[in-house]
Length: 440
Image (cartoon, rainbow, N blue to C red):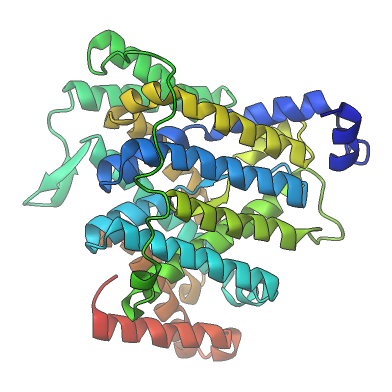
């Protein structure tokens, strides 16, 4: 396409940017989030029992579709991919914890995307976002961070089961797997401290290289190949099964986390890029539409919820200001499907993927500072939301407990009017869910 056409379509002049800057910004964003190409197939394929190759292709295609839609529809430098936390919830809570078939879990993801689209079209999303207390939003984010980090520690066998204390530090840390994990964690941390773009991704690659030299990781038989078939997961979602009453909490958790992940990322990244107008986000409806359609497309392809990535801020820091940045990310995700032999070799080794889970958990836990710890009506619901997620191994249970305790705490403190009516309704629904259907 002629550069002048691209310049007009993406408004390079208005945003004081040009094609080269946008492409470099897109490459930077891609590198910061490319770890999802290894982590997502590991979680959904290796752990949840889905076809590994199909999940890899679904991950890349869903990220490409979402990023392309965001770039073309909303003209924002924000990339999308299957969300961290949501993929862990899909795998460990829904599929492994509750014994739900992955096809039904994909159906729940698809329904959440449809509901998200309806909320966007009807403009109810603003009412919902405003109804949820700020403290609970940050508590959910921090709790998911602890949940993800715990999974990384467990998968790497740094933390093991213990009859005496339930869990404990592995006494045999000198084994190759835990040692390689610790090396990857330190390497990634050093790269982040030094300000490397794509530190998590390059940390995984560095860990894989060291693993191959030490014999912990097998050498790939080749670097490139035709992409594997997506047929094993394509259109396999069981929507009717997911519509059962018992799936309310599952679908709600998918919607809730996606809604606030997306809203927070949109506000944060566009504010950094100077795209906010009078404290309002232009084309917000288009951006949220891109997100919801990407989630539905991802479920149809065979992956968990697709959401906007805060890592897009790396591209903005490199000069990205328009949707061309996101389009570049989409193109790179499409190219990545030809690197399956590398992903197949690396993603099956927990020592390579676990440091990424732990580091992402650390980044998400930064939300802890936003909670009002001096106010017990805010602190207690937030703390228990955060704590229950890793202990109960369920994001949905943590969310539900927070939504029950928050209005109760406010009522006891004589602050019932500070609670939005929607929260009382959700509290009653979650109480009924616990009473009649057990844990989530």
